[in-house]
Amino acid sequence: SDHPKAKPVTDVIDTLGGKNFVKKLIAPVDPITYAPQLRDKSVLLVAAKNDEIVPPKAAQQLWEATGKPRIVWLDADHITAGFFTMSV
Image 1 (spheres, one colour):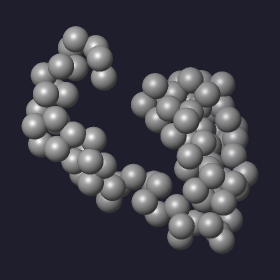
Image 2 (cartoon, rainbow, N blue to C red):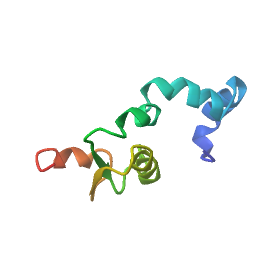
Image 3 (cartoon, rainbow, N blue to C red):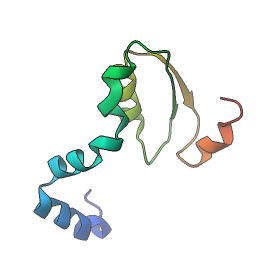
Image 4 (cartoon, helix red, strand yellow):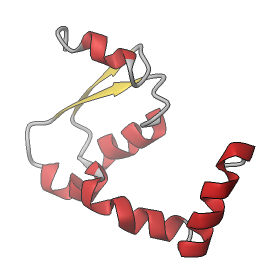
């Protein structure tokens, strides 16, 4: 990120190996790591149109990687998506 407050963190990440380091670090918990196993399964993806934690672009990539299953787009952000839990 180019945000000034992120500089100390990005400096540390760059020292440790940059984006490749982060990718390896989060791979065990990143849903896209397991996308191939979901291709032939009955899957419903739920994504938020204004998610600031899991950007819509990432949800789109997961949808494509899992074989384009049914996806529901909520008109919400990461936190307010919880309000839709009962309706989903």
